[in-house]
Length: 103
Image (cartoon, rainbow, N blue to C red; front, side):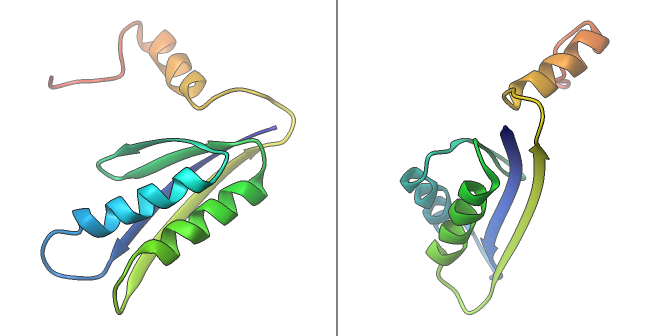
């Protein structure tokens, strides 16, 4: 089984959130997950959904603030194995080019 999730954790505050977001990303190191951070969140891959929930919980708890906003979207492929990169590869196969623009 492969579980892919998009996690976004941020304090509700004015100014830069980078330091607090870094704490959330660093919290993922304590779990058996693969992850990649992008401007809109962090994509997490794990072998089971429990690991994703535990990692997301740790990331949420790592952020300091009076108010923390967390969004978690999960794609739990229960009958198919494969990393998240295969999703991008499939789109690029259809495009016939990299799925990037404006660079």
